[in-house]
Amino acid sequence: MLMLCLSITISSTQGQGLTEFDKSQIERRARLKMDEFEELLFLISDPTRSRGAVNRYILSSYSQEDSLFNRVFYNEDVIIEDDISKIVLTNDNIEVSALDVVTYLNNFKLQYEKNIEKTVHFTDYSFSEPVQDAYTYIVVSYTSKFNGKNINLDDYNYPAVKRKATLRTEYNFKRDAWQVWISGVNYDRDVLTSEAEELTVIEDKDLKKETIAPPPDQQEEESLPELQFTSTIPKNIKKGASLPLKWNNSVEDAEISLYQEGQEMMTLRKGLYGQQWDWNVNQKPGKNYSITLYEPATNRTVKSSSFQLKPRFPLVLKVGIPLAAIGVAVLLLNDPGPGPGPEPTQDLSEPPGLPTN
Image (tube, rainbow, N blue to C red; front, side, top):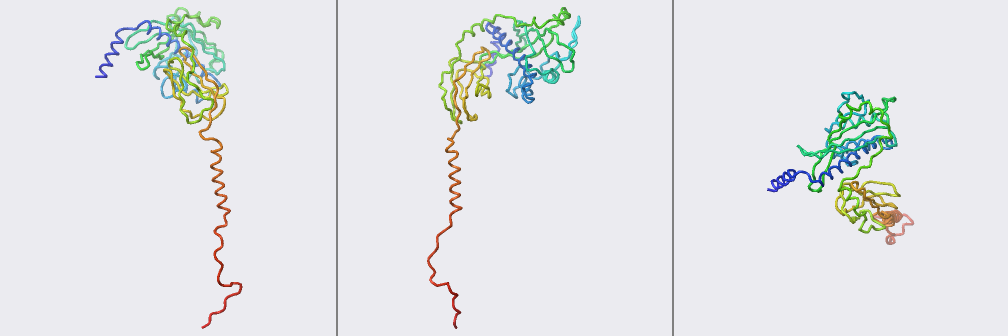
């Protein structure tokens, strides 16, 4: 009965169509997902990232096997038309390869030059109306420009090209929110067939981010109160403690990170919802720690005051017990043993006489 009721509820919701709030939320989340795609390519091409970290970024982007980076793509079967190799623009078509997302990202890792500066830029976003079919999706048109080089093509400069990304959306009843993932990326052939020659001479100055009015629900979110911690964070926190962290306003898909001396040490938790999270403190003791709560959807953030993480047991107790054990052992080694027994009854200074018959 429960499954039947749930099925009826979902079918009824889908049959009612999308509200204006649904449409604006889907568009906003699609924009954020495209920004994550751009950020993913930057991290892969960042020379300061280790090989292991880059591989984890790639794995996280299309699966739930790792959580180092947000899931960007619907799954590992997503197809992306190649824009890493040399792009051949013609008047009637474009010669490219269709790659699965795993191959595409690994090709990008191996072929695109590393640069500490950001060299991948997505601009000029435009969004279609969300479409309800076998599943709900939205199409994002944008301009893609690689300012870096292909290590195999030193004399080749990437042109700015028009691309289209299809993003699949699903409604999460538990979170009461739309979730969005990229399900395919291809060239915008409607533009390429009519403007192929022009696309090869677009200059970087034409790629500035245009100012687009945020959707209605995002305008409302911008007036949300600033995040503030409402729970008191002690100046000294013992390792092993359970510390409830509370804040003034409900968050959605937020994260909490641990900092020391202003440097991010680790992400304590991702995917936070609501107004509270319990922190089980197991981090290394030290001074000048702080925690930061960040909500990507609204760009709201709050940082705690500094505190110290202390060991579970005092240093004196940790050192004192071993020293006491050592002291007992020394006493036992130096102990001469039991004292002398009673005086002998026979004078043994001379040997005893021989026995007589």
